[in-house]
Length: 151
Image (spheres, rainbow, N blue to C red):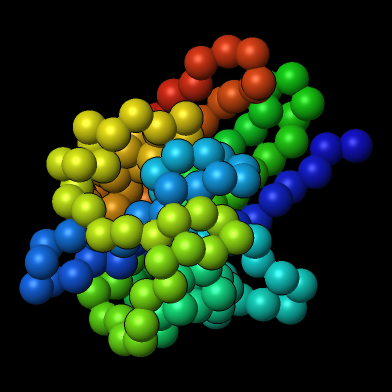
């Protein structure tokens, strides 16, 4: 039986410093990534994004802009993984330096692009930055390299 995981991911930008908030994840999807996580039963995607950012970073966010969805299919098991993407520049609170997910830090987009990362989050940047895609699709398995196609 195939399974489907539904998650969110949020790019938070500090307009004053022109930096974005990333986590150096130590659990799943290791490496630099934007905060986010699994949608709970009965929870809308937007509310999940707000809740997960609060849990992982300590920040309260609002005025989220929907950036699209990344749809992954495991080409061996046919499991699906959906990631609803948001971004915002509106946040308040005190940043937690470390959570169970990993270290939180502000970096530039160029630093993210140039950082080595197992999860290759930089491949998601067109969805957040270019405003011309609504979906990205990727096929993966644990033995082969992967890529995504923007639509």
